[in-house]
Length: 144
Length: 139
Image (cartoon, rainbow over all chains, first blue to last red; front, side, top):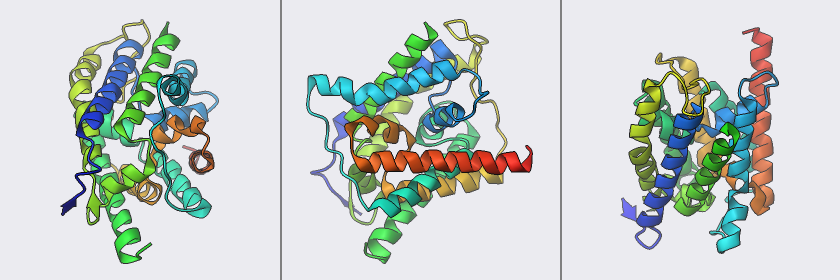
C-alpha cells in the first residue's frame, strides 16, 4: 500500500467529520430522526411520507451550505471523474441501491454504525467493499 | 422550531462535508483507490463523525419523544436481508464509479457543476424506478 501523504488531510477530515457527527446528533435528539440523506430524499419523492416538512428543511440546509461557506472563503476544489454516461449510470446505481439497501454513507455509515445497528454495519461493509473493488477494476484492471 | 433545528442540522452537515473533503469526488475516489496513491483522509471523517455522534445517538435511542416534542422516528429493524445486501453492493458500485454519494451530491448541487446536477437527476430517477417497481409488487 502506497499512502499519498501530500494529499492526506487528517485535521480537516476529523473536524469535518465532527461537524457531520454534531449535525446527526442534533437531528436525532431534537427531531428524533436519522440524518440519512438517501432516506430523506426518498421520502420527499413520496407524497404521503411523514415529516416531509422537517426533512425538506434539513435538505435545504444541506443544499445551502456551499453558499454560506462561500460568504467566508473560497470553496474547496471539486473535480469530477468521467463523462455524462458514467455519471448517469452511477447516479442510477446509487439511487436504486440506496433505496433497496435503506441507506447510504450517512444513514448507515455514520448514524447506523454510531447506533451499533447490525444492519448498518453489514450495509457499510457491502458498499465499502464494492466501492473499493469498483475503483480497482476501473483504474487498475481496465486502466481507465 | 423543529424545522429550524432541521435546517441548522442540514447546514452543519453540509459544512462538515465541505470541510472534510467529502464533497470532492476526486478525493473520495483517492480514498477508494487502495492500490493507487491512497488518501486515507475519509476514514478519519467517518471516525470523527462516529466519535461525536455515538453517545448522543445512543441517548436518542432511549428517548420516547424528541427534545422538540415530536415522535422518535429512528429505525428499529435489526434483521439482515438480501435486499439490504444487494442494495448496498449496488450503491457501492455507483459510489466507486463517480465518487459521489447522496449527501455530497446535494451539498455540491449549488456549486453549479453540470456533473452534480446530472448525477442528482439520475439518482432521483433511480429512487423513482425503485418506487415504481415496489408499487407494481403491491407491497
